Structures are given as C-alpha cells and as structure tokens.
Image 1: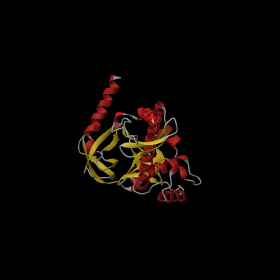
Image 2: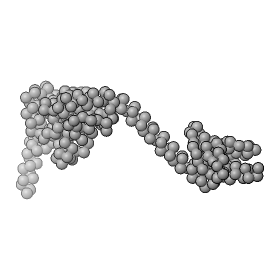
Image 3: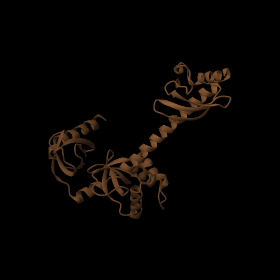
Image 4: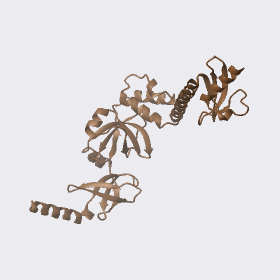
Length: 294
C-alpha cells in the first residue's frame, strides 16, 4: 500500500512539474474559472485574460493561472462534449449574454439521473429562444450548451409564444400535446415577463386585500355579536372602518370604527363627545340603552 501511494505521489509530482507544458481544452464564462482533469485530478485555474467567454485552448502558467492560447475549433468542442452525459431542456430565461435557465423536458428522468428538480443554468448558449429545446451536457458541476434539438415541435413553440404575447395564464392554456413540463416552462417564462409580473402583482394585492377584509369582517362581526348587535356591511376608509350595523331590535346605525383597536371614532349618534370612550362591542349596549330610555 505504501509503495502504491508513493508511486501515486510521484506521478502527481511529475504532472505538476509538467503543467506549464500541458494544453487544456475547456469551456469558460466571463469571470469564471477553467477546470480540467489531468491524470485523474481536477485542476482549477484563473484564466487570462479574465474576460474570455467561450471554448478555448489554455496553457497553465503555474498551479493557479492559465493563459488562453486560442479559441477552440468546432470539431474540438464537439469531441469534448460527446464524452459528457446529455439532458434535453426548455429555455425559459436568459440570465446574461450566453447563459440561460433551462427546465428539463422530462422531470422524472432529470431527477433520477441528475437529482434536478427545477431550473438549471446552461452556459455558452449561442442560439435558441424561449420554449425552444436544447441539448446540454454536464461535466459534473456545470451544464454546457451542445446544440438546439432539431427534433422539437416548433409549431408548439410558436403557439406558446403567441399565448405569452396574449398574456394567457398557464392554467388557461388549451394547446394539444402540451406536457406538464412544458406548461411549467410556460409558467416560468411568464414569471419573468413584465406583463405577467404586473398581473401576478395585482392578483397578490387583491388576494392580500381579500384576506385582510375577511379578517376584518370576523373581528367586526364578533365584536357586534358579543355586544348583542349584528353586522350588515362595512367599508374600508383608510385608518377606520365605516360600519353599518343593527341592534337586537333591528335598528340600523352607521359608525366609524378605528382599525387598530375597534374603538369608536364616530358613533353616528350623539354621545356628548364621548364617542372614543367606547369600542364597537360596548357601543351596541350604549345605543340600545339610549333607545330604551327614550
């Protein structure tokens, strides 16, 4: 065992010593790192120049830096990619010049083979548009664009683009051959589209307002019920509720009630300027008492 370890260490030492004579084919994104496997070990280098994006032939300067010698040719890139596992994905959002988010066209397969359960970034995408299917390959840490999937249904892609332009909601799509994954892709694209963002923001605001209104109704109704009254209706007036309610005798009154603690701002009847001494619950008894006295 010691002999084998020593041999391995000697081998690595030789590799390190010859790094500067090694040429590496590798993909690189702007501001990223160049990774390459040499003698079974993965080496990571800072590329120079550091603004290079694409496939290149690099030569290590030392253990930390690698110089770009020249861009890689198409046959070189194709040969490199053919050794890597593939996955077909829908393009759903462009992150920057050559990087997209992609959603697997077969979610079960992606989860089983690569533990992918959502979108993944695909680097060095040089063609394609939303909803189009691409073939990507992974080196174990990143996904790299291989090609557009020419077998994809481009008529279906155009139908989805038309639906997006018409601002149709994902649940409203009625397109033949629309898979659950493609509907999910449509939903993802919609999330990143200005028109849909405005729509969803409006829906969220309406939903929040509805929840707030329902909560307020429960509060107002409970307070009136405990006092012996009954809620008829209410309106939001900013800092207070404009509440229409009736006594146990069926007499209707309208009062301004503070949202913060349901104290009375204006009872709607003369209380000798003591309105704020009461809350909604106690107001019912006060009003009914006044009616009985009369």
